Image (cartoon, rainbow, N blue to C red; front, side):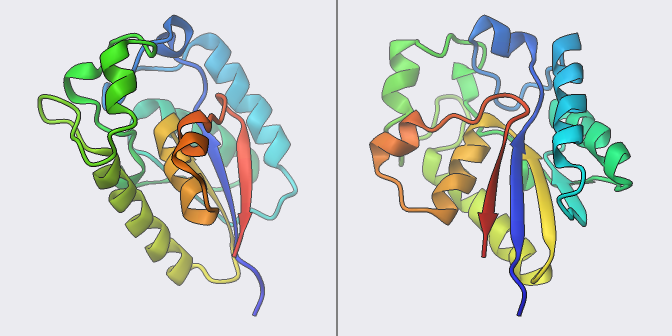
Length: 180
């Protein structure tokens, strides 16, 4: 059986990325630089044999995936399981906020006011990965999502300590490659 290959990319830059703010489920658009980054990502992915594109249904990921999809001749498939972690009341806060940093390492504790826990977010993303890997054996896929979602994806494919998980960052419109 041939290998399944998954490319996982983060959406282009948003104003919240520039301002170093948390942006979970808020639907923040790409900046002009973010759009340019998506075009650069598209060129980097040409010729890699990608057969399907899945993306978060938040606009910053959809627009990034549409730009890439146009270059590859593919229509992205939005899926809410690839959305960013729901940070609840922590959204809009600075990424170096002490309360956010504490909660970001408390894996079972939900973010306040309706947010997800890290474990809930991982469960959602892992379930998505289990499903698409089963349905797409031997194919090459692209996933376009978010910062924390990419942490979850990376931890699905490789062993990570809590510290490694915490430090893992996939910059805007960068990608990682995983083989099964």
